[in-house]
Amino acid sequence: MTDPRTAGDTEAKLEAPPWHRRLVEGLGDLRETLRRNPTMLFGLVVLAIMAASAFAAPWLGLPDPMRQNPIGRLQGPSAEAWFGTDMYGRDLFSRVLHGGQISIVVGLSVAFLATVMGLAIGLVSGFNRRLDAVVMRLMDALMSIPSILLAIALVALWGSSVRNVILALTIPEVPRVVRLVRSVVLMLRDQLFVQAAIASGTSTPRILVRHIMPNTIPPLIVQATYICAQAVIFEAYLSFVGAGTPPEVPSWGNIMAEGRTFFFRNFGMILYPGVFLAITVFAINTFGDGLRDSLDPRMQRRV
Amino acid sequence: MSGPLLEVENLTKHFPIHGGFLNREKARVHAVDGVSFRVMRGETLGIVGESGCGKSTLGKTILKLIEPTAGTIRLKGKDITHLSRREMLPHRREMQVIFQDPYASLNQRMRVQDIVAEPLGNFDTGSRQERLEKVAALFARVGLRREAMHRYPHEFSGGQRQRLGIARALALNPDLIIADEPVSALDVSVQAQVMNLMMDLQQELGLSYLFIAHDLAVVQHISHRIGVMYLGRLVEITDRARLFADPQHPYTEALLASVPVPDPRRRRKRRVLKGDVPSPVNPPKGCHFNTRCPYAVERCLHEEPALREVAPGHWAACHLR
Image (cartoon, rainbow over all chains, first blue to last red; front, side, top):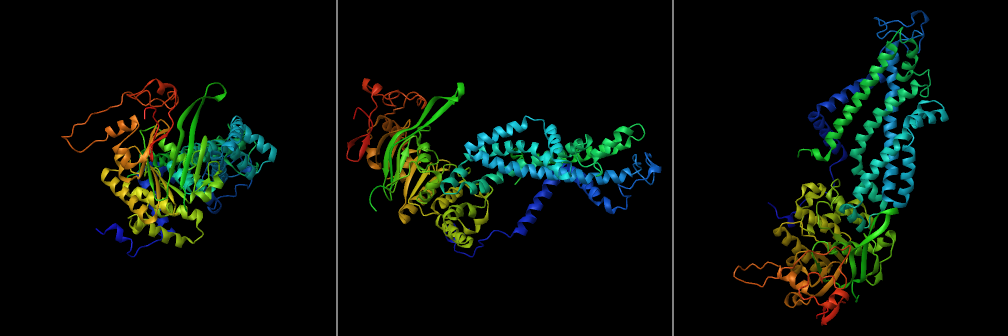
């Protein structure tokens, strides 16, 4: 054993390990988490398959999802068209795969935007008492409107496009994120390490970013997965009632909406996109549950 | 520079309790109730009292982590009582804090070098490398290995964490350190190490401490003068030797009688206080100690005793002295 008082004089590294080594360590942690949580791994794998098939669809040699074929309308499944065709003779399998792109883009964008906006508002609101009163009443007002109605109203106001659908689905989700972040901020604000930071002259913005924000990230990631699943469903819902993505763009909601009329001729138009939607949402939720379990402080990670 | 480093006059902190119709103020917790004292340069003033007597609130109020209700705080002669958070910043350099719980007072998600460097980053314009050099010097000074600088707090023991807390408090080269029960959470052997470190640092750097504790033995070891608090009020303040040799306030007497003496043959008159500390929400009228005082007379029930100089440099708040 070296004497701790003299050990300081010996050669020592002052800098932290470089970022790429920390990244490798971080990925190792993730792999370890997944190994101990097979359900979460399952969700992640299913999700990866859904995403890969959706985004690789244009290169899989499938028929163009927009190409009409009036002679082969409303066909059942066959070797050429695995899921059959719709009322314009378009290939359903190709349409369902392409439709996944919209769902995944909308789901991820909404989760990301709602989390970032909610984080910013929640941090400031949790630390500023006067602003807090105003912001939280505004959030209460937003939460009192059913989110799907609010989204339909917003799309009706702004016109239908993928961007507007994303924004319309983001806004109703923000208040829930704000509440979550704010509760963490209120809890942390009186912690000793925050008090110590104030006493050593750290400015409020720095305290928020350095001491408080990192502690809000784990619950936020979990919340983001639920928002993502919710947004995938709501996007389909909006498209189904005709307030979502433009009808020429294939999306699961659009395909199901069109299939409504032809349910008895070819129920695949409802069945296949519905099954894909259900599997995707299930996979996201499974992944989210696994994340929650592994980030829960009560299930302390082994050292 | 002459004059006291820290001068606290009639400092009061009441916490309102809200409730009932329209959240009106129902009652007040009298946490700190008119406390006055001075801390000189290079001096350690110990503050003792049982839990709930307001000693931690006193420390936090002086640090302006809590806004005082009344009274004044002067640091190096400058009144800082009503400074806003931003106006306080330049004065933060002169007054630092060490907290009781070495686990909760360090951010678990930061490397210890960044924790200790944080105060430097708030005031220092030097480069990151320069700051890290300073941190390395601080590590050596408080007896930590500089190889451990990029570890995380959970990799350290309680005593080492408290050394980290001390290093952080020293980073800005303050004149005054408010130590809020800095050793209460540590093992007895580690307590001694940390206290000796603090005393060494005081000699080297000419620091002043406001040392808050509930353990009289700990305070006796480190303090030059000692103040005794009871229910938000300072009941006695004098230098260490006098306090132990000739306590004037009945509460101080009782506290001293409760200190264990490592001598099995020594028989002492035990003076155990009866009853509990009254609630600071509704403190007793007159002298706060009258409910438990063995000598209380009629006057103690009505009239609040002032802190009087009963002997040169010895102040006590009791009608009977």
